[in-house]
Each structure stands twice: as C-alpha cells, then as structure tokens.
Length: 409
Image (cartoon, rainbow, N blue to C red; front, top):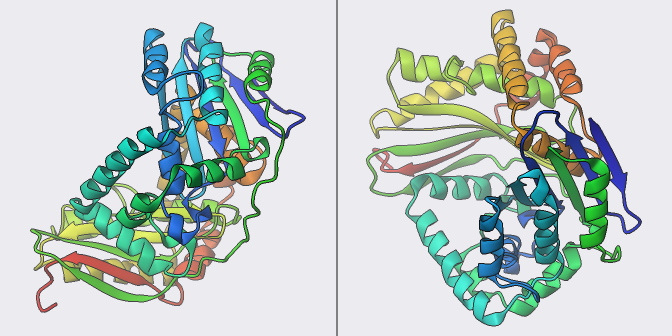
C-alpha cells in the first residue's frame, strides 16, 4: 500500500508497505548533486556526504557506526550529479533508531575541522584510486568532452585541487543552503506503517522550510568530435556518445527499449556482432545517462589496439543503421520482455520500491506504480522506436573518446 504526505515545513514523506516483508528500508533524497556546485567547489556535495557520517553534536562517527551495528542494520549513502541519497535497512522495531540517527546526521552535522582534514586525505586517496582505473579516467574524460561547458560534464568527486581547497566553513554553508526540508524526501518501504514513518519524520526533521538556491536550467547539448588520451595500456578503452533524452522526455521509454536492443544486453546487436560473431573485443555495450537537462546514449567497451578501430567503426555503422531503419518486431518484443521481467523481479526487494519512490518524487513529482510503468513500455510501437532512433542518431552527431595506445596516434 502506497501513501504520501507533506509536512508543514515542506518535507515530503512517502512509503510503500509490503505485507510479508521482514525488513524496513529507509531512504532520504536531497535535491542537490555535483550539477549544483560552483566550479571552484567541485566535489563539495560528495565531500559533505562523507562528512555527515563523521559525527554530530550528540554522537561521534564511531557511535553512529556502533549504533547501527548493534541492531544489525545497514547504513550507506551516495552522491550523483543531481541528488545525494542516504539509505538504511533495519528490522521494523529499529526504524525509530534509524530515523533518529539519520535525522541527527542530516540536520545537525558537526563538520569538525580535524575530522575534515582526515576525510580530505580519504577523498584524495579515492581520487588516486580513480586515476589508476582506465575505466574511471575514460568516463570522466568522456563526460567533460561531451558537455565541456555544462556542470553535468564535471566529475561528481571533484578534483584533487578542489578537494584540497575546501574548508569546513564552505561545507557548512553548502549544507545550510541545500539541506532544507523542501529539498528533502523521506521514503520508506517494506515492513512499516506510513503514519509511524510520518511521525518519526516530523520528530527528527523539524527544521523550518528555509530558502534553497534556485537551480537555473541549462540545456545540455552534445559537443561533437574526437579525443584520444595516449597511455600505455594492454587495451584501448573507448566511448562513443550520441544525444540521449532527459529524464522527463516522454520518448524515454522507447529509447530505453532501443538501447536494450542495440547494446544493453547480451542478445543485443553490438554484443552479438562485435564480440560474438567477430571476436573483436571482450567488453562492448551501450547505456543511457538521463538528467533533467539532457542525456547521453553511449556505446563503450575495450579492445586490443589492433581491433579498437574496427570495433568502433562497426558500432558507428550499427548506430547509423538503427537511425535509418529502427529495430524489428522481434527485437522490440524481446526488449519489452526484458524490461517486464526485470521490473517484476525487482519487486521482491523493498530497496527497489524505495528507489522507485525517491526517484519518482524527486524527478517527476510523483510516484509511478509498476503497473503504470509497464503500461508505458507496452505502449511503445515500432514507429515510436524508428522516430526516436532518428531523433537521437539521425544527424550522426557523436563524441568519440579513446584511452590507450592506438596505432598511429
């Protein structure tokens, strides 16, 4: 049973009770991510997420960890380009504890200077680890190349320079500006009652509404071209990006089915033709990245230096073929069945309900039931797929980024 309420301070609270569930899942979404950061403070959303685990006026970082461990609970968080999310899973009787700790963390962080110096070192180690990963290097370079003038093109983690320059005062100001109740969503799923969740949210997120900075929309338009990053590696890693669609575009359901047929599964065209039939690479596929202001449709993979150009050429040819002809009825039905199976199987996990609630309220202003979502996919036709393929791929606009040792480069 789904229920939704809004408190007087603007905090939205939503829940889905599942009969027979043994766990209570709690999630808190904050409508702020790396897209909202000034360039000079790149990574501050991610840094603040880390610091909220480092103690409050009432409890230390160790106490936060010990209190969750004492009841066998799980607590974690992540930061993305448009949102920051904290989530916990506990037994139903421990839901009040989970809400009390999360409320304390999110509304009364200590942001201690000494803790920040230690966490800076952790974040800088994370940056060094990313620098050692070709896939992470490629992804960051690809996003910058696709959207060089847009905040979405910047890495979520910032850079060593911006992290080193951040201060506790800046973290505190960013928290005060963005972590106000109207920018927060509290969601619950599993073994819980909505009225109980609402009371707990009211008790532990009592702050007044406040005024958050206004996000000024800026269309994310694909920058086209090619970029090669030379590095001595055994393989060439590559991304080939085309325009995608925003999170709110009504054509996104057709595009998702297209993506599954083109490169989003092991039966897809790219996987079968480039890996299975020609053996040009081990890893090849496509994926969608969608945000409020735009999206990307990306083919990515890796191949030996002698095979990389052939794999990229075949991927480009396949995208052009899809732009001209769309996909066939068998491919559409197979993709539709994949979506249906994945969605229905996910319903066994309360965390999936939690994610659907938080994502729906944050980005669409409403929760869409599984039945509604399936209906949108069922309504997609072959003509829709052809039209959307032409819309995204018709002009041949792409951004190509390669990392490795290409012959002749």
